Image (cartoon, rainbow, N blue to C red; front, side, top):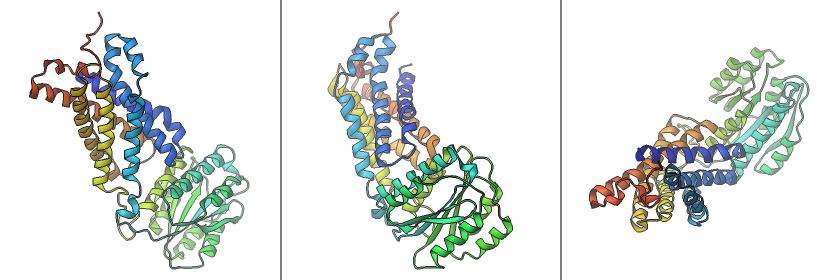
Amino acid sequence: MSFIRHTLAGFFGALAGWILLEPWSSDYGVYRETLLLYAVAFGITCLLVVEKYVYAGRYRLAKATFKRWPIYVWPAVAVALVQILFAGTVRESGLDTTPEERLLLLDVSSSMRGRGISELKRAGETYLDLLESSSSVDKVGAIAFSSDASVIAVPSADYSALTSAIDGLSAYGDTNMLAALQQAMGVFGGPGDLPQEIVLVSDGQPTNDPRSILAFVAQMEGVVIHTIGAGRGYNRGFLRRIADETGGQFYSANNLSGLSDAFLDLARKGITRERGGEDTLAIPVWRLVSGWSLFGLMVGLAVGWLSRANRSRMIVVGVVGGTLGGALSAILFWLLDLLALGGATARGVSFSLLGLTLGFCIFLAGEIYTRVTGDKGMADFSSLTGEGVSPVG
């Protein structure tokens, strides 16, 4: 029973942190990401510490826990260690850092009015924030298209200027996709020294004959086109075919809020690309394991430090169990990455697994300690969060 409580405490702690902060992290820049990680770490720590008190009906002890500084500080240290260890991994992991020229072709036809144009702007900001925070060297520009097409920014590394240009867009007119592609080729000026990519976003049927668009795409030698279908009125097969025929990727954002996730995935792949091969992990496996192991260690240290009995032993148990849980979580994250999962749901699943694994491993470390040392006070692992309290009633 104690095993189930402890494991579920870690699971629901992480889940609560994710649920509370995910709506605020939709842009997922580096600061929002840090805040989300802290919420998850804090949630796991809180529930692992207070679950015993709550189960025993000793609510005053549970409340008193929040007056102690370690419950706030150690989760912050955990997040800081993860961010420091994961920082700068793109260049150090031996991936190609050759800059690309990339154009965002943004559908601003009348059907994008209201929420559509708002989500498009937010997605563009998400994309550019991540590129800027990762010190990307890619040159990015944008073309807005409706009844006609216009270049709102030529490719450059001035992401703030492009963000401002996108923020000033308004929706009107038809969906002249062919004009946008023609404008893009004019901007590129034919094959150049840098790899060239297009991110094409549309929420509806093009006003041009799809066959003429595909014929023009066939002439765009060396240009990779990624396509994103927004909403529910676009031609899925058509956009997928454009992506397939140019070596790009198709994204379906039936829920308009999914635009940010699509752009986020493209930004990360642009940062971590290895051209001519498959996408590679931005963070080397050894860093992934080390980072999350340190994260688990700090959470376990907080749980042990906040113990009211057998503190020194509880710190050892928390540190060992937390480190093991963090390492196992890193392996699970790596497996999820191989499945190419992304977006808010994948983050929720990952963080929930992190909490569940940490809760289980800290409990397991307590059980192993009991068997090795014969310390019966550890048998129920109750001294981790209280003084051997028993359920009321």
